[in-house]
Amino acid sequence: MIAITVAGILFAIALPAYQDYIMVSRRADAVESLFTLSQQLERQFTQSNSYTGLSLATSSSGGFYTISAEITDTAFTLTATATGAQSADSLCSTFTLNQRGEKGGSNPQECW
Image (cartoon, rainbow, N blue to C red; front, side, top):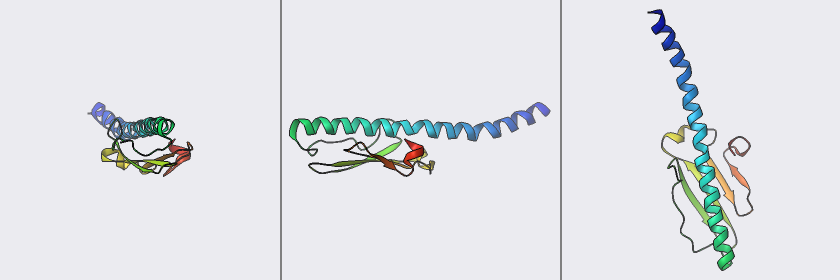
């Protein structure tokens, strides 16, 4: 009975820590997707001198973030917004990246 109680206490401590670790590791999905899309837009710009005209993915590669874009001829801002289970990540719910490589979002110092 004592062993079951000890195991229960360890499980109660370990499970939230594990879930937090998983949530933090999924942030890489947003970062990778934003950098990939940014590179595609830069290639588009070198070919046509405009960022417009390229169709972009609407979700991150892992599916944990929804991707949106504001694109003009000379500028873009990409935004990744947490979705599904990842939306519980209140510290880093959004990531942004623009054509100058400036990183932003809900907490850029902690998240990037």
